[in-house]
Image (cartoon, rainbow, N blue to C red; front, top):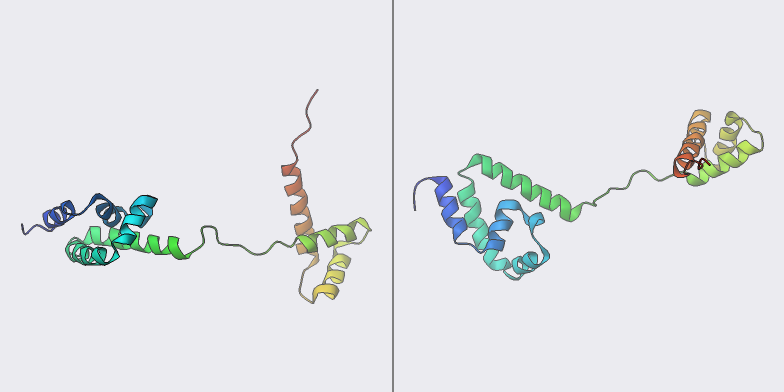
Length: 149
């Protein structure tokens, strides 16, 4: 084998089947379902090939960093949800506040009532006003504008 790390790596990759070469060079996320099935059926062989690939790759720092970044991305994709959940919506609180507002209560009195019912510190007059107003804006966005005749 030549003493050039790039040539050593290219020679090693040339001996591998296409699906293994693709997995090593582009990560597991780049594989099709059929290629993933092939990889899974060859797990023991893949470990030997991976060890050799990583040994050769360590001699090329830029490619080694890229490989590690791909490995991390594969792990994140496998274990983290695609769209992590945010905080829960306060729909019930907003509905109750809107109902109290229609009865003529001020934002301060609505906040006092909600804090008495759900516990101190649940809301303030500013928070409840903004919550109700943001829901009104959302409902206006969802409603199409009237047609002109």
